[in-house]
Amino acid sequence: MQGPRRWLIDAGAGLLFVLAAALLAHRLWPSPAGRVLALNPSDQALDEWFLAYATRAYRGDLTLVTGMLNAPEGVNLLANASLIGMGVLLAPVTLAFGAPVTFAVLVAGNLAATGIGWYLLFARTLTMHRAGALIGAAFAAFAPGMVSQSNAHLHMTATWLVPPIVWCVVRLAHQTEVTWRTVRTGLLLGALVVAQFFVGEEVLFLAAVTLAVFTLVFVVAARPRLRVVAPPFILGLGIGAGLAAALLAYPLWLQFNGPQSAKGGVFQPGFFSADLFSFAAISPLSLAGDDSAARLVSGPAEYTTFFGAPVLLVALGATVWMWRRPAVVASAVTAVVLCLFALGPWIVVDDETTEQRGPFALLSGLPVIESALPTRFALAAIPLLAVILARVVHAAITQTETLRMLVPVAVVAALVPLAPAPLPVTDRAPVPRFFTEGYWRTYAPEDGVVVPVPLPDPRDPDAMRWAAATDVRIATPQGWFIGPYGKDGAAAVGVYPRPTSQLLSRVAKSGTASAVTDAERDALRRDVAYWKAASFVLDQRHPHAGALKQTMDGLLGPGERVSDVWVWRA
Image: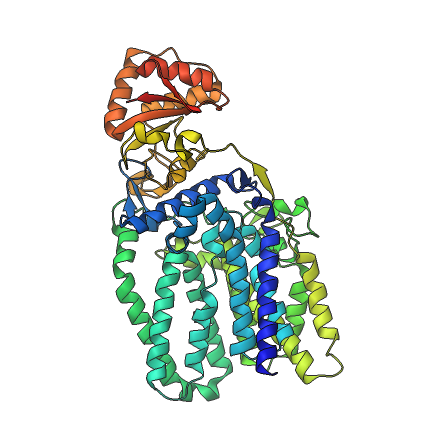
């Protein structure tokens, strides 16, 4: 294929990925600040806070442990899916248009960039036919697992650095002698690993496991080449690992042993296990799916194993047909291993937990790995299946006349039922003008603590958006985060609320004002001193604003009406 035509086709493929991703997220676009992903609004509020916090890097004030959330104790960003890399990268967008716009850009952008990355790897590096590359990359970017994770799990859909990482590994595997190219590729690999750590650490973990298993299987399947490629391959990997280890030593220490780090995982592996029936099912988020399959997963962001029976049959047939190709065999075997891990510690069949232990039980007790969510191992199987689909289309088009049209049509037909529907959204209350128009500056200093009434917690973190609207120039007590508040410092979601927070939460739920006692006023004074609070703020549109205002008046005296909120100076 001639150069100009090749570039034109590749540009067209990239445009298709961008358009498809934009269509998937199009319901957010009319009003990013006024709409929220209906299936996971809590995580979206957290993501927007993280994206807004990252803008502090442009003020020279970004730390990995910060007291701007859960004031005054703070949170360890590395112990949370804090979107640091993406937040810093897109901070200009956040500063110009706000965190909700950046969030909407990332929902679509992660999928588009992932598709483009895999397409270029398949078409340019692995020299596959453009049709095969397009089909494989489309599956890698828009498989049901990726679409479901787009419901506010941006750290899981940010897989666009994985294709360049794989490119480095492939480049090393194709070298037959050690040269400066080996060193450069190893250094680039190390730099990409570091970047992916800050973009999405869980994706990096899954990519490392996948590449390790793939390499072992490939070595067995292609032993004659091993002696030739081993020296540059091992050296390049060693250089990459050494650079990554040197640069990530402190961040890893901070994550697991630094301030506000937590022991273990906060989510139970058994709860996030893949149902055996889910592998052949169609995701409810696909056009051909329905809600009946939702019972097979823990939540709408975890349809990671919903590959559908047609795709599995096509992948199986392709593997049998191309069993002599080491890359295809390694992809198939590795995908099976990952899906076995996705089954979790106990096998679940049709929403019923059996007494049969799953392969994930073998990882029980291993540090870090035991905290992984089993079902997400299936996410790493997506690009492996994409390799098989792309390769079988390439082989059919370039090597056989009789199957030239039949195989691509069969592959596309298997993928059609998985085509995603647009992500569902719903309206949400706007952030009070008190914050968006800067009125807060009169009632709190820069980085001062403003206490929302009621305080945000894991069940309702929406008030975290208030600080996000100021680019996190104010600190917030409590919130939705992971910290060391479980037994003996174990990981827990959120913090145990202080007395004033408990009081306001009861009023917000019941809609009945509290007859404030002297003991509650004394508790308020202690809480104000603990939080170092500058002011308390109540949105006038809260469903129980009247009861909350009456309670706050009893605690601190009459509040002051400012724009669309009530304010009490602490």
